[in-house]
Amino acid sequence: MLAGVFRSIASGFKHTRLKPQPLLQHYIAQHLQGIHTNRTMKLDQPEFHNLFTPELNRLSELFAKYDYELRITGGAVRDILMGIQPQDLDFATTATPQEMKALFEKEGVRMLNTKGEEHGTITARINNKENFEVTTLRVDVVTDGRHAEVEFTTDWKIDAERRDLTINSMFLGLDGTLYDYFDGCTDLQNRRVAFVGDATKRIQEDYLRILRYFRFYGRIAELPNQHEASTLEAIRENAGGLGGISGERIWTELKKIVVGNHAAPLVRCMYNLGLPQYIGFPVEGNLDEFDQVYSRAGQLQPHPMTMVAALLQEPGQIDDIIARLKISVEERKTGLLVMQLRGEGEQQTAQPLKHYQDLILKTPGSEQRQLLDRVCEVLKYKGDTAILSELQAWTIPRFPVTGKHLMEKGIFFGLEVGWVKDKLVALWIDSNCSLSFEELMGRVDDLRKEVPKEIQEKAAKKKTRVAKKMKTDK
Image 1: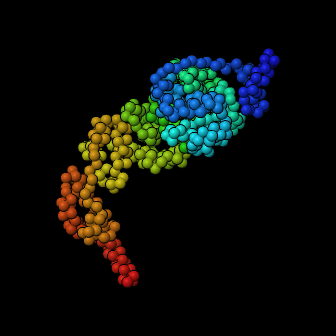
Image 2: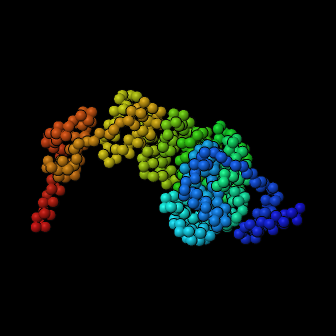
Image 3: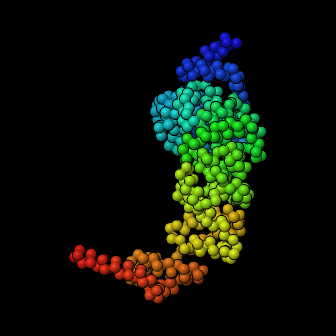
């Protein structure tokens, strides 16, 4: 038995650039576990053949010319097997970064973003038209749950083993050969989401894989809550590792989970496993509200913050999310507006469409488009599809009077201009936006007489200061 182990080790040294010690450990472990099987099949789907642009053909020719293997990897392989046309292609190769650079330089191929070289990635631009990201086969030598130190290899099985899920561990040769070392194709057919090998080990290599598991479960699984008990236990035991992952990486995954398939049961499962305290969600999230909102809005393409708002009970909780997840200003505004308006009842909005339109029209013109989008999120939250359709079809009318027009009427100071303009906007909205420019400007003189005294006094003081300054300058 031991002789067989060491024969495997000796053979392995011929096909890897790894240092002996990590390789020794790797091959002994693999021999004892006996988990590697090279399963291949030929694909002939149109989604595969549609990939071959002149640029991809050129890339393939270059690697073949220098006797390096090149295969498609990751999501594109999964998509093709599911009958989906891939939008992005990633490639893996037996060539090292230095060998790729030498190849591309010799053939006059432009390279972009060579900063990925440390992790084995080179981006080549073929025919000055199409970019291809190619990564050298790797093995993780040292991991800390966030990052990995890698060494390069020519062993496709070793690279496949370091990937997170079986459905993401397949390679596709450019001749249509599928290389499947961990039954990813079978799992995909069965809509099963499973880690490659030992779930605990895969998770501890990068704790973000916990959230990636839930994201892919939403994409792949046909039924909710069909998780394997061992997988959930591994997630529960390692949930705390998410506390060391950056907010940006966590939010990138959460944004897809909360609006994807099975979002409600997935979020509830994440709560049951103790994840919220590590990912910025409120520990006492309103799961019943989330369930109801998802049932109403799930098919309306809600913004992720619309769904997250369902978990929140107080506006101040958004600040906790900002602190952990680094959400954008616009995302914060969306969440706050949803929370502000979600409780409005019919008695408050007798004319709901006009109510929302007026809210938008009272906002400065440069912000109206963004507010319209946010109000649509409120309607998705409520499941009010009729008003949502009307509002989405509505073209925001342009208020005809500008500050410049008012200055031409002799109103020069900001506070006074702002007050008069606000009154004109109110008149315009009350007329259902029917008052013309001339009609509005005809109201200016009367409105100036109504400007509050404190604003008039401030305007007069500023006018005096400006006059003195002009006199001094002369």
